[in-house]
Image (cartoon, rainbow, N blue to C red):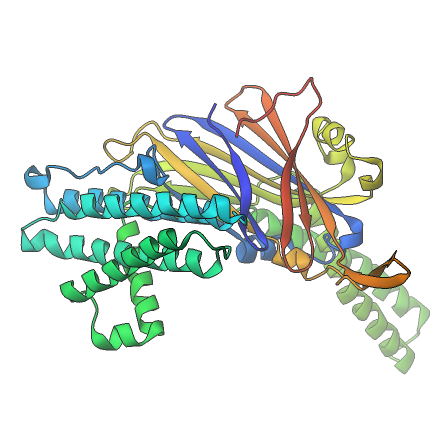
Length: 462
């Protein structure tokens, strides 16, 4: 069973990632237990709007070694390959290189102790220098191939420089590590000079931070071609929703027609009173039609997948995988028993009323259609908690203390704990579980920690 990881991505976002092999079928369910005091529920947060605005996924071919020490060049001896094959495998290497840099630098950013940060920075700097040299030793001589290489080389050089400078800018300050910082800066200067010597970017582009940033975004998209899978997302239940709209309208009109006939019997002739009564009846029709439609739709939609997704190879257009996606607020009685049992293990002070937000994704990977040499795809899904944070209160309380007769106070921030239960199933196998505690305030995630499970439940590896 492959590992499934859940970790913090940015200040207010979390990411889960996993790999799925060719021919596999997998179900993943995430149950967010949101305390009701956060003010988040079906009345305040629309699931569909949250899905489109705050959940971002990336699915691509996967190879072992998405950390720098394990990245391997996949485009040696290309003299016997076509231009298309060269470009494809060049993109594969460049994409994995960029993902490796992202992974390792994000781990470095979380180190707050200088004694841990600077030795790790020295290691990453050395690895980057070696990999860039190894990459450039495979530069092709053919002009048809050279432009693709230069695009990737330009981007990787700039990207590595930016990540290292960001680490130095936000890393812990400490004396005694000047040599490490200087070696890192030396590599950044060398890469900047390298790009200048190769004339990769014009003077106008280098002078304008907007232009250089946007150019690099374009180069990033170019190296993703053939690697990141093409996604075709389709909302489900469109026909059923139209049927519900028609049925709700029909039921309301049935009642309205009966009331109109009754009103005509009560008011003899076409009088002002009859006109007023009809206006009231039709006004109530508009009010209740929407409510009845929403109630019927939620009841019928409950438990059904909301979207389907097809993943295609961008080069061959072959279908690589199919997915079904769920996102809904659940009633407590609909939550699986095992999930409820896991959440019962909370400390007494954390046993508060909650709203359950369920995200589910079922993936079936094809047994063919993969790019030659690959048999696994990687999926990363990022959940932004910004829509949750906007409902939270800012800390206003004070904590007082007395020391030697002097009274001082500190401002206390308001924190909330969101419990997350992950349920994983491979094919028709047994369910595996994991529970995480997410402590957050209005501005950031404070901590993500993994909690123990009841002994009778199988744990997810990760």
